[in-house]
Amino acid sequence: MEQTNQKQPIEVFPKNPILFRFCFILITLFIILINNNSFFFLLFLERILTPVLTDLLKFLASGFVKFDGNMPFRSGSGDTTLQWLLLLLISIVSIIGCIIWTLIDRKNKVYPRLYYWLTVLIRYYIAITMLMYGFVKVFSQQFPAPDLIRLTEPLYKFSPMGLAWTFYGASPAYNIFIGIAEMLGVLLLFRKTTTLGALIMLGVSINVMATNYFYDVPVKMVSTALVLFSLFLLAPNIKRFYMLLIKQEPVQLSRPPQPTFSKRWKRIAFISIKYLFIILTVASLIPRTHSTRKYIAQLQGKKSELYGAYYIPFKEHLNRKKINMPDHWHYLIFTNENSLTVRDESMDLIYYQLIPTKDSKEFRIVGKYNEPSLDLKYRLKEDGLILMETDSKDSTSIFLEKIDMENIDLKTRTFRWVQDYPYNR
Image (cartoon, rainbow, N blue to C red):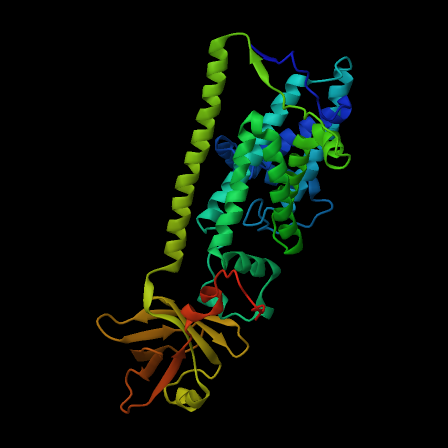
């Protein structure tokens, strides 16, 4: 039977029993219901509960919230209307549960064993969440390098989140750096490094939260929880940190609660389960990473022979009419062999299907709605692309100049120790 260590008293936080009961219920429900894919064994529960919670929340909030028929519970956003309503429901249930618990259990003022398990739950939630975040950054899956579409997009077209994603993705080294910083959350999986891990995660999660708040990234709820949970772990030592850092007096930090076991086999079983869980959690990230890479590769498709961004020089504008090229086309961007992306004069995107003809330098551009198809043949040059009508009897053509995306500052401007003047463009 597990027992708490009696030689070293556990400093339970918060000390007020009513506040502790509320925090225990609130945090436990939050981690179970807003799991953020951290605990793999809860994913099946999430699939079962999602439709139930969706119907329940819509029923309870139908009087003061106008619901869209396609309103998602979970999407690419972690701050959906239903997620915030779920947080409100969790808070209400926690208040009611706290009142009932207080009425039933008036004798106990401290709960060392519950506090221990609550800290374990918080530690593992932060650690696995940050490990997952760091993992995708190290392998450049959250912030991919800017593609041709991004690199030809004017700054005024960017959303705050799009700008942040492009900023982070422009530097693979910085991606790895912040990924490793987040992966240091693994320190929280071990009791002796809990305080160090919580301090590091507080700094890291504050940066994540600030990015989400000020660049309109819809993961504000979870990132705020990570900050508050890190503070919860550090709370027993807050006064000691003040004495050490402000008053500069020697202090001894309070250690995290530690379980003891009456029998050796129980301790071995407990440790074995712990490390098995860690191994399975880390192992579960590998297939996720592989499937994400595969999904991204499928979206990108096979790289086109014409890969690149091209623009129409001013002197070629008259020739565009002779091959029936639309007047509003400004940039032509070829990424894969089955699609063409065009930027018009307003720099808006227009998407076309590209149907290549086998064994020849020809393709058909298929537009949407009533826009006619365009059959062209092409010839590649080092500095651009020559386009001609497939059935044209004369030699009328148009030359598109290629933008050399390999020699732009974002790719060629690297780390320098010495700079006599700032290179700020």
